Image (cartoon, rainbow, N blue to C red; front, top):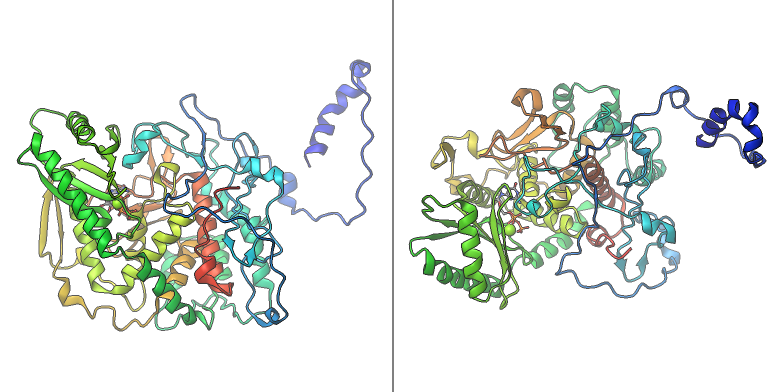
Length: 580
Ligand code: GTP
Ligand code: MG
């Protein structure tokens, strides 16, 4: 196509008097004898979509996702194992062993082809499993592997860590191209990477039944009725067709994977030794702080206090103190000095973040610790999450597995445009609030028994959760079914364009209904996750047009792995290949 366009442009010049100045046109290679590809008519007549123009202050950063430091280094790759004769009857592995797995992550920096949304950045996620080796990508693709961290400048800088990289590229599509539409368009007629793999699976005459417009009658539970989704989204056939595509029933043997998933969940829980090391760290921190601020109180927040902490979680501490006329930044700088003097390592004050923090690591345990000042919203949401966790154990199981998956797949890095652990937990809570029958209630919609006043905002909810232990008993879904349904929802059913997920209300609401600020500055939020107490705070604000693709590809991969792979407990958590 490109070649033809240029040839057309050059013709008048070639026919004119300047022709002799030009090198003789090279003979065109003979047309391939293969049958011409049919191109849908709109592709021939549609003008090219405009390339977003970058403002001078915008900056693209190419950063690979970071390998978690607890992830052991990969062992040398072994050659692919030959399929054993008995494998034919087994469910097909996912992705097919003959194809490299690509993460269709959208436009590669410098490639002006973002208009069509075709990915030129191949993401190979061939994790290492003994005896299960996906073929390596061809060498040139290696250069193209890029994570485009899209960081917004100043406003809504969001996550504490994002201050480290403080400016970047606005996710707004300046050419007026609707990003979501672009995603849909590209995923339908020209399915690349993952889409293609899913189609292949669709075409396989396996045991899956396409349920047409009917919702999947999940065992014991189910999705919300499709009318609900449709009425909220008011979507055109595109959305309907996407929904139809994955009206598949859960594989009949899904429950075989529940024991494996539960064993993994158990292994992720922090050990007693881990907890006591955490306690030691908090004690020595308290000692250091009390030298300068004897009346300061320490509150643990985040996953070390909300029960969602894994053995890889950091320690989050909120200092409650009178800071008088000093600014939070000044206090944090003083604190950083004290911590350095007390031999804590890697101490830094990150003062320009939405929530300014001091960060350090403990030389004894190696734990990383974030300290913020008077951040009571975090204290309140920590208690809320902890209370939700006590209602039904499937929340903890689901959230641990999702967090673990997100860390291993490199989609748990807010400063690179993917989601925080906190956001994933909110997604899990909201998902369980929406199951039919419900697994979790909406605590903020019930008679309040707990109130914390934070800067004039009342954080209230029903916290007598011991009364709710049987709440989800009617729903018999296993963790394997729920994990599958979770990824399926985020891969195929969530209406990214219109919906905001709200734990506060226990449902999804439309952006219009919420009067959600869909544009902040020049930005447009592509995935909206409402904070339960700071309702103007969108945990999805960090997601941009590149990382939304990455996230959705990962959700699709996860759903497909759980649906088709013969060893999903392993394949699902194969680390994103950091080495390629
Ligand atoms: P781990 O990955 O296990 O450490 O999970 P975590 O829940 O501790 O996540 P993280 O350390 O990123 O965040 C700590 C806490 O900060 C969260 O649990 C929330 O209580 C609070 N928080 C509030 N808003 C945000 C936000 O926008 N981003 C993040 N990351 N945390 C927020
Ligand atoms: Mg944490």
